Length: 237
Ligand SMILES: [Zn+2]
Image (cartoon, rainbow, N blue to C red; front, top):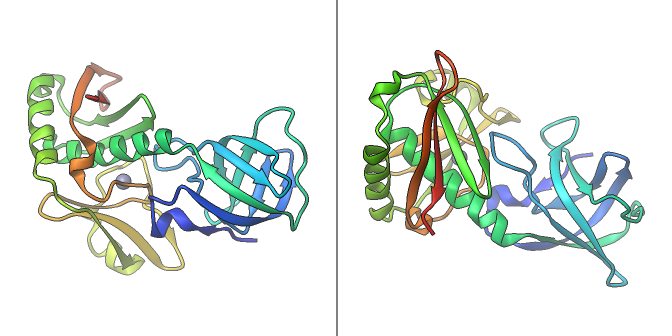
């Protein structure tokens, strides 16, 4: 019972029509979705499912199901039970998702400004962070902000590239984030390419052109342990 992941092909899809496959305590599964499930540090989408009669059912979160190809749309408490086979129109909270896309893509750029292994990361609509295995004294907020914003200003179009698991295994240095396994499935791995800047496995949603990020500011830098120096950023506007 796999769900077609429409956001993989087009991160800018805000709505779609779908049918309910199953509905349970943990959430609703659909035959296709534009809702990104929590993963790779990126928060799951929120939004609504519109029933044929016009009733709006709130999706408060989206999570992966028992496999990467299964998506659970988590409904707000008190939501009605949806019927298997029922048609629904999906609408994501686009303003929220677009912030996630801009912040997520900004983290790719920041991982090129700070040349150290990435030990963790997280993206929520208000802010995003990466943890690095680096000495705290080597992290300057002013430098990170200036260099990341200079990359953003280069206004480069991003690309999605697929390679085989074997090709990835032959290039282990592509994997910067030690805490997150690259998204694999059916022998293929999805990469985000920012030509001339970055290439790394990533299953998240990204902006089409890095200029869309606008600019970032560093909120704070602090130590979260010997191998975790955390850099937290927000969108400047
Ligand atoms: Zn990414």
